[in-house]
Amino acid sequence: MSRRKAGGEGDTVGSLLRLANTLTRDLAPLFERSKITPQQWMLLTTLASIEEGPTLAGLARHMMVSKQNVTGMVRRLEDVGLVKKGDDPEDLRSSRVVLTRRGTEVIQRLRPAYQKWVDAFFSRLPGDERQTLVEAVERLLGSEAGSTKAP
Image 1: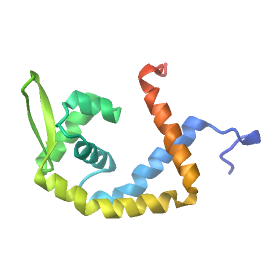
Image 2: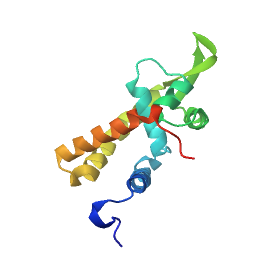
Image 3: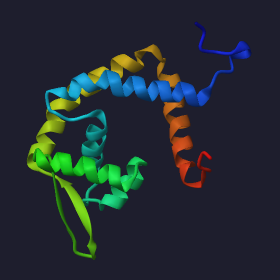
């Protein structure tokens, strides 16, 4: 069954959703032994890339998910000792999230296998196409703040 309509125009959103589902499904086994999900991996690596622990709301904005979603992920990662929450000295109503030593170790242990998987998955695209894809996705994500929500 062809996934494209005549003229090469397909359902762009449908294709992107299928890609997101494929990435999530195919990455899951890589993280299973560490008892984390691909989404939790994204949260951990986001924390590793930020110098100061973000607030839950800031983390949610960065990951483009709801604060409730981030709160649940942080709670589960806190339960297994990979992150810890602390008070925000500037706003006592907020919490800041940081990696624990164990969280950092998990990232260091999984990163080589993750990078190998990413390189293999995207090897179907020549380097210039891969870079074009990254730039296009980043432009779309950058425009998210001004986008309209689906009815």
